[in-house]
Image 1 (cartoon, rainbow, N blue to C red):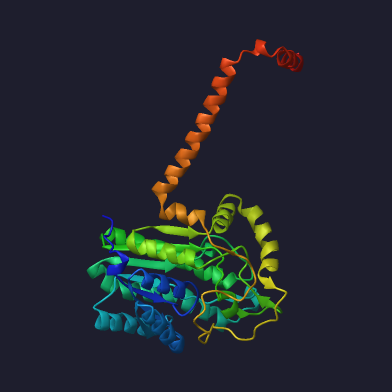
Image 2 (cartoon, rainbow, N blue to C red):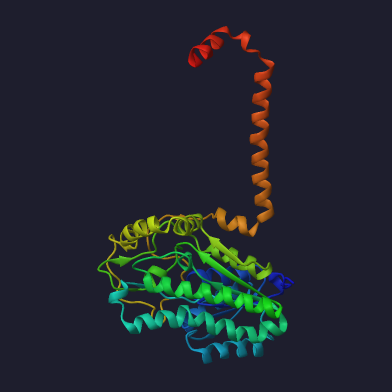
Length: 356
């Protein structure tokens, strides 16, 4: 049985990591669609400001301060939302941090912290949210990455954490299917996004870090998340470039290894900007920004995501295109049959000459 999910205007949606980037974009879009949004992050000042802005625009918003790496704090978020709002319908595990460093030079403290947020934050959010979702139905949406399915040097610890997120999410989905729980479990896998990720990540390099291009607008991920909140969907890859890279890594892994080993050391570095000395790895970063500071052009469409969100429309377009090609070929064939070769003696002689 597919879980029955509510329309956005009928939903209360909890979003972790909601003070910037994908989380902030999703919260704003959900509020504009009529949902009651609950924002969660470590940055209380940013959360208060964002909620005030959403309310001024006519939306419904509330916030709870929490570090998702601490299960007790996540449990408090669940209890607080139930007390204040009677519960929730969708829970989005989006909080994430990054490190730009080779694995050999990454400190144990930093390596543990990235897993505490990126992996354990998803574990804590999922398992605590399920106490309510299994009893009432709803959607659990985890934000992974194309890094969940391909290797990446420099962002190595981040990549490892996102592989763990995928393994956890896919396995949890099977357990809930076995239980016939009324919960939809989705994994969103964004390509590179033009968010403050590169600004907030801890950077061991000698120049500024950036999200390797091509980069997409976080609005595309927000659309995918809100689709999954209303329609049970196993997973969505956002960004055609990410889909191409993960397919490449799956089909030709040895060749992909050589390409990625060369390219990531160049594309993750921003030689035009000085290195930033602050990061949001252990402390809250600046909030309120959807986009990052890097100058890379932003892509605003994703055929890969649109195909997953609108599969029937996509099939219709593909079928129509195939039909047009077939009709064109039939017309050309009919024209050739109507015009005998004898009408063009020069062409006939030339054809005989070629085959002679």
